[in-house]
Length: 139
Image (cartoon, rainbow, N blue to C red):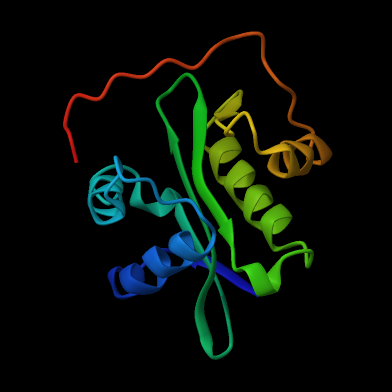
């Protein structure tokens, strides 16, 4: 597996992967999410590929000078349990650390225990805070 920065030619395969992984929601247009990410720290949008398979994993990260954030961590269903998610997170962590990022935050849907367990195995713990959100631009 190779981890690299996203390329615009990856868009269709990335959206298909996110769909296959159940990450898409009606209120988030994945094409707009990608376009927005490409305007800010595009080097923190990572793609994993294999020979003959251009996109088998993704991780989208950002750093605002205070905290790092990770979104859209995805691994193709037929490639799970092969440490790809772990490797993608290690790559994200290394890039954020190189930027001086002291802490990473991420959000997991509260009913997704399998993903909670995955992140706990990587050393992440639930913070004593609640995530709030407000949509400014409807997709």
